[in-house]
Amino acid sequence: MSAPEVNVAIIGGGLMGREIAAALQRWPALVDHPVRPRLTAVCDINPAAMDWFDQIDTVTTKTTDYRQLLDDPSIDVCYVAVRHDLHEAIYTDVIRAGKDLLAEKPFGIDRAAAASIISALDEHPGVFVRCSSEMPFFPGAQLALNFLRQGTLGRVVEARSAFLHSSDVDPTKPINWKRQARFCGAAGVMNDLGMHAWHVPLRLGWDPDSVYAVLQDVVTERPGPDGTMEPCDTWDNATFHSWVSSGQDRFPLTVEAKRIAPGEKNTWILEVTGTEGGVRFSTKHPSTLEVFRVGDVPGVGREQLWQQIDVGSQSAWPTVTGGIFESGFSDAILQMWAVFLAERVGHLGERFGAATPHEAARTHAIYDAALRSHNTGRAVEPD
Image (cartoon, rainbow, N blue to C red; front, side, top):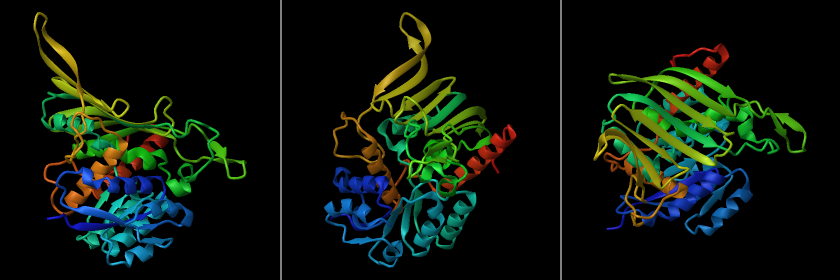
C-alpha cells in the first residue's frame, strides 16, 4: 500500500523555501517512510519570488496572503521561513488554525515572542510543532551522536559546538534585515544562527549552569539601497563560554555562532573529549568522523588514539543511496523533514528528532543571559 499523503504549504518563498521544496521532490529516496509529502501551496509577499515554484507541478496555490493557506482545509503542514519579527504573529496563527508547523529559528524575535508561541501551542496540544535545525542530520553528526550516547567517554573534559558562517565577511555587502535589530532582534547573530549550535547540546541535556559571552559587532555600517551607509546594530559574532553539569560531570562547553568567520563557508562543528574517548565532526570535512579512544597498540603499549572513519550516506532515515557514497547539505534537509514527518505520525522511534519548541525557547533564555553577560562583563546564569 502507498504511504498516506501529507499536503505541505511554504510560507516564505526565499532561499530556504526553495531548498525545502527541492528536498520534498527527492522524497522517493527515503526507504519505507510512513508518509508522502506533497507541496501544494506557496505564499510570499513578493509575487515574483513564487515564480520559481511554477516548475513543481503539485503546487496549485500561490498567494501573497498566508491566511488564505490557513483557511484551506486540504493543507496539513506549514513550513514558515520569514523575518524574525514576523515569527510570533504567523506561527501563532498557524497553530491556532490547527496546522502542524515546521518553524524556522529562532522561534520568535525574542524570549517574549517565543513564550507567546509556546502559549499558543499549549492551548492547541493537538498541533505538532518543531523548529528547523538541519545540521545534526549529516551522517557524520549522527554517528558522533550515537557515539556520545554510548557513554564511553569516561569523564567528559570539554565540549564545543559551533556554527561558522562567512556571508558577512565583505564589509561592502549591502545591508539587509538580518543586520538590523528591529527585524532580527537584539540577539543578532544568536537569533540568526544560534539554534544550529545549541540543538545538540540541549538534546544531550547540556543546559548551561552559567554563560560568559563574548559578542562582536565587527561591521558597524553597510551600504543602504541608495548607497548611503546605514548602521548595522546587530551582533555579528557570539561565543558562549559556559559550565554544564551532566550526571557526576561538570565541564566547560563552548558554543559559537558567527556570521563573520574568515576561512569558513557554512561550517557546523561538534567536538567532545573525555578521559576515555572523544569525537570530532565538521561539515568542512563531511566524509570524515574522528574518534578518540585509549587502547593498546602492539609494540607500543597503552596509548591515546585518534582514528578517522570514512562516513557514507546513511543518516537518521535510510535512503536508497549507496552507503559508500557521500552526503551534503541538501541531504541533511531531507533527513530533517524525514524525522519531522515521521515523528508527527508517531514513527520516529529512537532516532534523533528535529528541535522541539521548548529547546528553541530555551535558546532565548541563553541569549538573554549572553546579552546580560556582555553588558556586565560577568558570567550569568540563564533563568
